[in-house]
Image 1 (cartoon, rainbow, N blue to C red):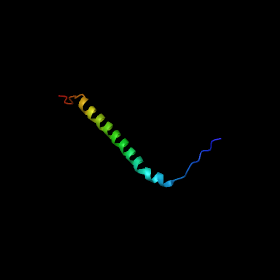
Image 2: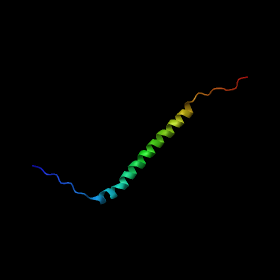
Image 3: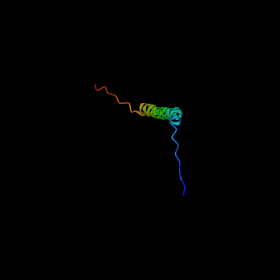
Image 4: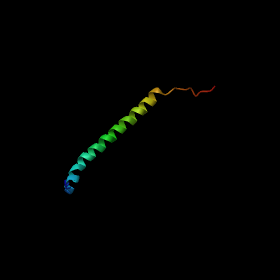
Length: 54
């Protein structure tokens, strides 16, 4: 019979907060870049209509 022991080490969580923060920052940067590219493409490909009705 195999017995699995789990050790509780709360300092491991505190040490890993840096890596979790960096991962979340990376996700935020990628989502921001996608949003900016979408806005840029919408601006560049928008049809220009004349609103002057004489």
